[in-house]
Amino acid sequence: MNSLHSERLHFRAWDTSRDKEWYFTMHSNSKVFCNTLKSTFKPMKKESLDLIINEFETALLCVVICKKPAGDQEAESQRIGLLMIKNIPPSQKQNRCANLGIELGLDAQGQGYGSEALHWALGWAFKMANLHRIQLELDGWNAIALKSYQRVGFRGGGSFEEGCLEGWAMVGSSNKLSKQNQWCYIGKRNVEKAISLHQNVTPGGHSDIFSIKWRTYYLDYNPHGHSVLKSELVREKLAGMTSEQREELSANMKSIGRTFGISFMHGDNMGDTRNAHRLVYLAQGQASGPGGITSEIVVEKIFEAYHERGLDISDNGVLQMVAVEVVFDRIQVGGWPGSSLGADEVDEEAKVIKSELKSGVPVFSIQLRFRVDGLGDPSEFPDIFASVKAAESVDVEA
Image 1 (cartoon, one colour):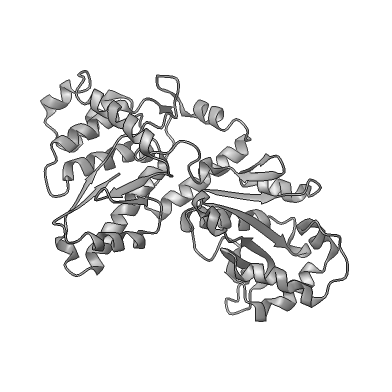
Image 2 (cartoon, one colour):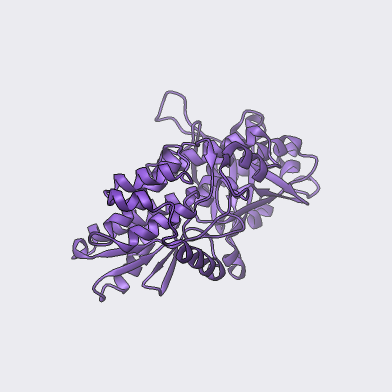
């Protein structure tokens, strides 16, 4: 996600001295006004904007939506609307839920700019601001806006439209590590970036040792007990969405993945992940270098096999291939899938993690004292690393 641009639009910060007169003119149009507010439309004094502008200036995000200039890059961008994500009251910050509002000038409506701006805003909300839920209030007569919201994946819920977070952030069950969870793969890359940042900017950071232990969580995407077509599971989980909306969510996820160097590929089948977790358990039992190099490679290879190569990681043949690629002993690998090695251990660990985990996913526990959201800003990690640097090594659990 580009932090300031989409395909046709540029987003810049609200500037009261620069934008108040323009917003007053746009907001004074009866159609724009009535599609934005429930209040009765009537002649408006500029002074009456002060309360609205105060909300803009204290918002979590308030940007002026501008059309990119055609050809002449030196030309002033044309202002066509305003988008705001309201600030979250202090007593509600733990919910990571915010309200969104968007207002487009009459000349900019009906051209797809609203949907494009919403796409950008959702990417910012879930990736940059680490929100869990975006919601908005929609008046029933605003059919054009309703189509735009549905197009980007919002769905109805009483008088509110809730962002369809399955494509943007986790809803419901949480996990520390699920091999079929795209966000866990992203979280892995995120913590790797944080470690690299620490090693490059902290004096002596290159000598610091990070030992990462991957813990088990069963997300239970597939309730059937056997490998089934992923398309069938998607239809079950997102039954309230059209095929176009599901495709849109998939495209959004692929776009987010690319920003982390991940090329998400949707394979045909999805099955049980227990044996994949057992393989990680086996790898962590014979880590062969600083920080458990073997287990790190195994986790990376499993994620890569499922998310980027479209392979079914419930297939023992796929897991054997992953194990051999990481230079496990071939004889040990050959007999492992049919044995019970690690089965009871990963099942018990999954129960413990499920009972103790109350936040979003993925989660990283550092020195068993600090718990960090794996999708947060990588720059938040080094402060924690620094606070425990007195220890000989830093242990990270994921």
